[in-house]
Length: 359
Image 1 (cartoon, one colour):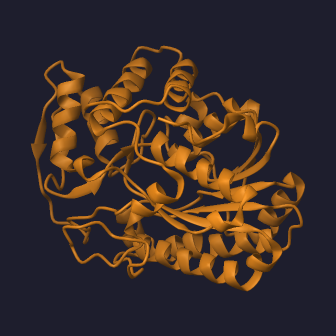
Image 2 (cartoon, rainbow, N blue to C red; image 1 turned 90 degrees about the vertical axis):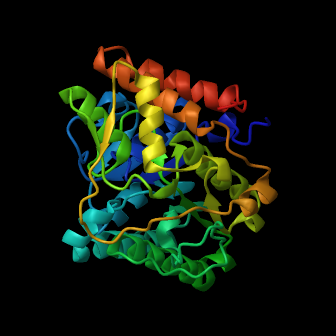
């Protein structure tokens, strides 16, 4: 498969990344550092303990700033000092259940945080390419059996999903009102559920599996029949970089893109748990304890025809291989192996020796 991300393009590029201390942000930071980017990160402190940001060994290889995207003055100062060529916005309150507990904080972070960042870009004279990372949950979910397309209605149900729908609309307005005439390329990327080594968040299936293994207990699966577009974290990260790179040179690529697996990898949470247990071995098992909780979508998948036809992109690692790589990372962590080395090896395998796996 053709390598659609050019590592040499990123060498020396000034990149401003929000949310760099989170799970996806830490993987993104590691990739950009490996590619030679001059990276500035802006984020709250890592959200969990343990956390991938510390384990990945990236703090000393970038400019890491602690700040809240709701604080416009602090954010503006950081952007002005970084003088970025490219901005990637990943900071968010990302958990559906938490959004029911803290809806105001969720909207302030996910909507006004986006406004603040785009306002910083508007007042900058150096930014050429912007990626706003949202979610597959921005769509009005009709529980369709087919995938949602970029032209479908944006109307997330819960506060998290809805705030990300609003973030999309904010981005569309800023693009049309301010950026098109200034040759600043802006895209949004709507990715599905990600898995991979180093996710320690609550209310996510793989971290729940890892915690249960640590405690020698059965894995508790809350909604085993819910279907989601699961993918390894490197899939959307490389797609974000691909779009940012292509639109940097050609504004015609600036648009809204779904980033997700093929239909065959849109599996249920129970199937994910099955695959994890088989890959992990050692008698790992899961139990269905479907508790009453706030509303979450039951069936959700994406139609990724647009990003495929525009760039020739397609998923590289099938879900089985994604689970294998996740278990590989987790076992390395369990046994105190070199986490930075294993991340670099996985990034290298994905980015430089891309091939499709049969499972």
